[in-house]
Length: 274
Image (cartoon, rainbow, N blue to C red):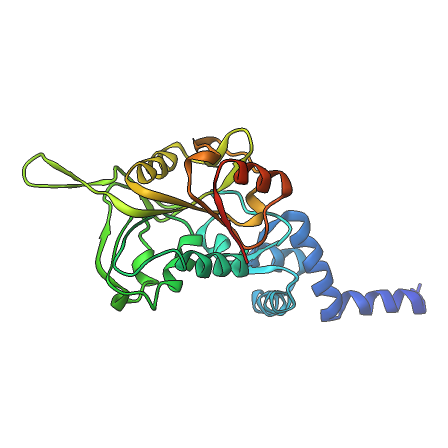
């Protein structure tokens, strides 16, 4: 018996095969899963990996999803703190660049600065390109690649165990001297990017060892600036390392929530935002 295909059935089939229809379903699949790989999508939609890559590139250009190495992530699925750097570099990029520019305004030429790990501090490094004569000490292994060599007099990287997820060392804020002696440091300013903040617990991150580094940097600086994008207010993570009133600046890309703004004002913290 010959199967008769109706006009509506043919239209549905045509829509399913059209790139626009596939891309719509691709976007829905990424939004549902949060994070997917090219290989998974190629198998699911029965097309080549090159076709999937082109579709993902187009959807990324349209702002529908975030293209990553080997796949894509939904912008609605906020990456976990332990997400890979390739994902975190692509999230809140405009906010990070704004925070970087604002932070550069409080860094004085000739000053000494402690800078922690994370992708937000990489934006700070890019914004320091016109500065001069800085002394920078960091546990961020990627920072040197973003700094202008003309902006600093000395650049130090703290030694210690490397956390692959953040490409940062977990360490003491000190350097080895002659023999068994440790040389501790003291800076004018500590720039600390955080993973979250709550009114009750203060500033936090997901890893205890990194929290200890952040606290150590605070204790070795005259002033402390917390760098936090707007998605991280009211975000509670495992390791809290400082209360709201222990810092001098909070730098974010937009005005913080009203309750945070009131609490920070009461604590005497200067809030910088665009």
